Image (tube, rainbow, N blue to C red; front, side, top):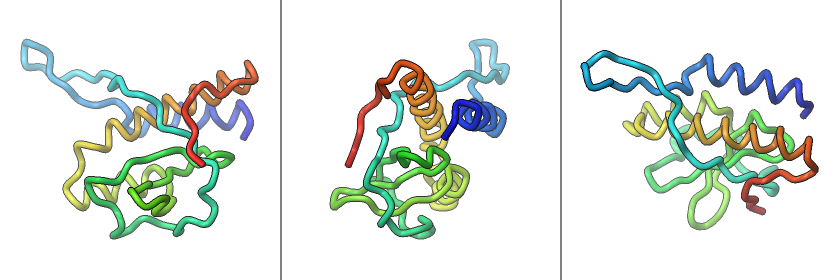
Length: 131
């Protein structure tokens, strides 16, 4: 993935809801980027189930698919569960009542993409990796 593709993905993610609504002390709604750690980069994801519908629960953690940074990998205790787009996973989380995890998922995805972008310029990815 080129720098241009990663920059475009970052811009798209910011525009599509990586900003979480919050309230300031006066009660007015504001938006701020949720501070979070970057999602880990997952290198061994290609054999994962394609699509995460009806597979997610509150115990699943997420990573970014190495080489296909627009894809998110869902990981459970026993290993990689599935892979899907960020928007599809966000929609599934909302549909099962885990909408509180969506903003941090999006923010962690942005952080991971920024680390990949910086790392490819420096020669070091700078985020954790999962095989």
